[in-house]
Image (cartoon, rainbow over all chains, first blue to last red; front, top):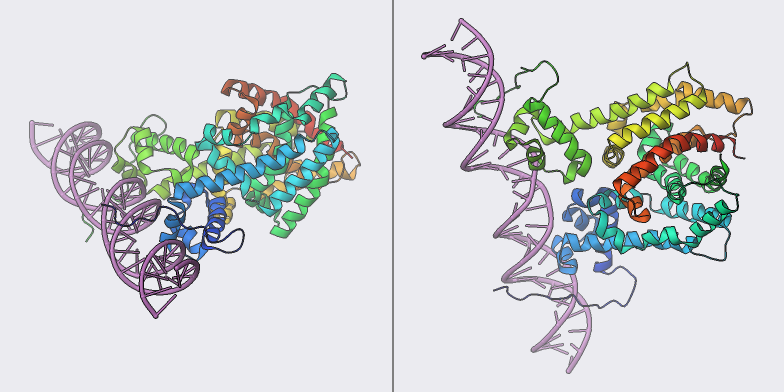
Length: 215
Length: 215
DNA sequence: TACAATTTTAATCATTTGATTAAATCTTTT
DNA sequence: AAAAGATTTAATCAAATGATTAAAATTGTA
């Protein structure tokens, strides 16, 4: 009794460009990142994409499916950029810290809404989502091994490795999460704010190293 | 044409206790803090409070009004605890840093959902809400004056005061915002996590002081 | 107790919103 | 060009949800 039903849209376009499917996905990324799942209406996405509402369901079946796609992509993008640096066994601890600050802040300047998006949505699905990225590998990464070795050799003041991870993620990501508030506190324009963030690329490694030696 | 309309509920109870009004407000705080405005249904609040849905509108007129109340209270609680410490002109810079870490983390252990709640909702209303708390006073606080003086005297490495504020808020608040993710990374129970947070009360002041001297 | 005011309930309304459908348009293939 | 298939549109549906209403229950008061 369901009339004619398209099971799966054709895959005419081979890769990139502005196919309808891509337009919808890009719009969904923008809106979901900015407003989160609950506050986003499928009509917002349709409008942002400049398409008819029904097309969203035609291409992606449901709001939830589309959201899962964006979330997975966001999580993996974050996890990959992190683990690529942490697992590089050719670089020193110091270089890893510098590379992390540089690359992570650059990513955040380009996508300032990602941290709040991920962490907000993670609050409701703590388990499922975390299991999708290899985030539990972080504590076994080459970086953390180097950190433990540094402690063993007396070069680093002993603390739980998670404190280090927290501090690095905190100092890079938090300013973006609290962006609006910080701009108010400091009376900063978006441009002023970004200048400070670029400064932090160099400052944070310096600070982290100081923290590692702090008694 | 609007039938009989209750303008304002009576104010029988003089202060505290478990009046219906209070039960609703407490329930609203819990649910809003945990799920945010958009994901919260008035029925969730009614259920959490153990009351009939209509009572919510009877006492608070609308979901939005109730939310504004909770938000204002949360913002002011945060701003007050911060400014009380920062504006105390009897204490040294070091003591302020120690007191801040101690008091702020204690507040967050008791109310771990507040930072994500405030910062999520602030994303949509950047202006209005910030104007409700005297947060723009922070850069003029006694604390920041002491900080500038320290730089002038060559005791502190010169950086923009906002970097200091960001670092202090980052290191204390971010772990709570990223709580679920961090527990996954570290394989921690809620109790384990809180142990780390208590450790940070002492560690963060040490780290901040090291950062202030880092070249 | 009786009366009035307040508080609470059950039922219902109106809007919003995710999703579907059937028809129209466009594209590709023969 | 004709047929077949893919894409897009306008209209509509059904469920969720914020809010209201009228009546019932409770409390306070003379």
